[in-house]
Length: 376
Ligand SMILES: O=C(O)[C@H](O)[C@@H](O)[C@H](O)[C@H](O)COP(=O)(O)O
Image 1 (cartoon, helix red, strand yellow):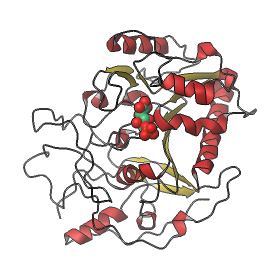
Image 2 (tube, protein in one colour):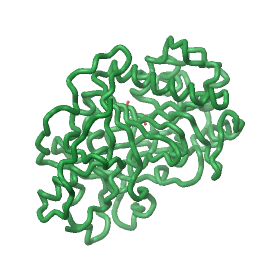
Image 3 (tube, protein in one colour):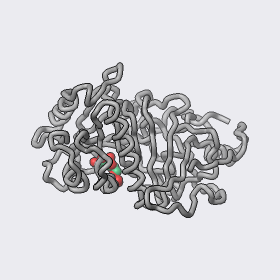
Image 4 (tube, rainbow, N blue to C red):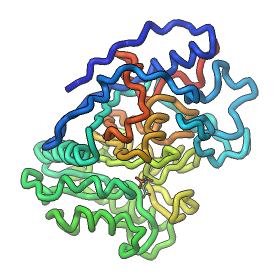
């Protein structure tokens, strides 16, 4: 059921910081849907709650003015609803390790669908529906379905796919959004986790699961993985006119600093405009060595879902959906599928800090298009 969101008020030029803050929170650009998933009763309608007062520690990156001295030396240090500062980036200062022109948002942002489920159980069922639909469409169109999986908590959210007889797993090709450069038997391996939670339970042919090659230096591991993708014929992995691969479905988790895949805030891999797969040798999240799909690959996909469940994701969800960060400071905000659809899959716990009643109806863009905020 699509939620009826009332525009809080017409947006006019604010004359005070507090009015500006109010308008910033009201101008959030997303479309929310309250979803009743398979077997899960919809209750406690998030979208029907009376408007909550905005938090006093609202997530302004900087008040009202532009940055007169240029981009701040530390990016990503805006405040979260708890009042705690968001994790800082690796940036060392203007001209040293800041690349202000390397990250951009498309003017006006992109449409996004936000699905809020009553529980993590309902979200898992809803995610299975989402994937099953993408799978059915792709298989009907060309007889193959490509899906890229992230690591971390995401893999457990795939449980709803197990036992689905309506999904033709024999046509699936499974890739990894990112992978740790460890043996496949390691507890750190995303392959191992995906195998344990899903792949050993569904009939995807083993040769259609593209795992990292073990035992290579990370640079070679990335090159080798890109090679595996490049070898896939266009009937399995079509290309855009610009020769980017078009994956049918990309499932992303999101970290507390807004990272997706192994693309961390303000890092060169995150800003990469070339290459399908890159090595990361000093990941801030262990293990240090990883390979990752690039943003252009993620953004060339047909269906991209950011899956964030549980209370631990509430702050990053709020920041990502309601406050446009400095470009690059919150990599998840750079997820903007050009020819595809972006969805966020949330549960009530991860959506708890969203101020949905304040979202402006008709303003359905993500992330927000003002950056930096315009002067009053
Ligand atoms: O392999 C990885 O580390 C990931 O692919 C990474 O991008 C992950 O999805 C996020 O860090 C969220 O992980 P959690 O959901 O476990 O917090």
